[in-house]
Image (tube, rainbow, N blue to C red; front, side, top):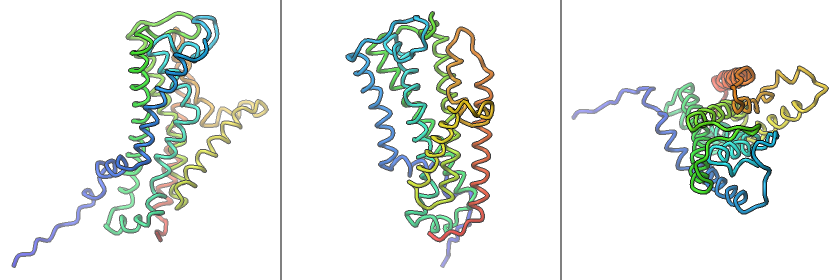
Length: 282
C-alpha cells in the first residue's frame, strides 16, 4: 500500500487569487461596486434634469457647473464628489475589514494553523484590499465616462478657468487626476489596516480610520496651525486640481503622493510587526 504524502509549501497557501475570489463573493464587495455604478446614474439624472448651472469659462473653479460639458468633465465631477469622503470610506473598508473580519468570524486561528505564514496572510490581505480599492475607482471612472458620453456627447475636457483640451490631452489629464486620487487613498487604507490588526471588530477598525481621517481634515482647516498643516497626510489630497490648468503643476502632487506612500508604508510596517507578535485567540 502506497501512501502519497504531500509536501507542505508555504507559497501554495492563501494565494492572492484565492483571497480575491473570497472577497469578490462577499455581499459587501458587490454592494460597493453596485454603488459605483448607480451613483453616476443618479448624478446624471440630477445634472441633466435638475437646476441650471453656471457657464463655461466664467473664471470660477466650478467642476459641478461644467459637468454637462462632456464625459471628461462629468467624470472629473464624479471624482470631485467622491474623493473627499466616499472613496476614503471604501478604502478604509477594504483594508480595515481584513484581519479584523477573520478574527470576528473565528477563522483567523484556523487560517494560521493551516498553516498560512503570517507574512503571507498579511500580504494577500493588503494586495487584495488595494486591488479592490483601485477597481472601485476604475469602475467609477469608466461608468461615469460611458454614461456621460451617451447623455452629454463627446466634447473634450473644458478647463474650469477657461479654454479646452483636445481628446488626447483630456485623456491624459483625467488619467493623472484618477491616479493621484487613487494614491491618496493609501492614507485611509494604511490607517484602516493598522486598526484592523489592533482590534477584532471590523466596524471599529473602519470607523477609527475614518474618524482619524476626519480629524486630520479638520486640523487642516485651522489656519492658526500655519505651516504645520503641511505635515498632515491629508493636506495635499486636493492637489489634483493642479493637473487641470494649461500647464500641469507637479510640485504639490509630487509631495502629496510621497506623503501618501510614506504614511502607508509606515502604517503597514507597524501593523505587520504588531501582527507578527500578536496572540491569536479567535
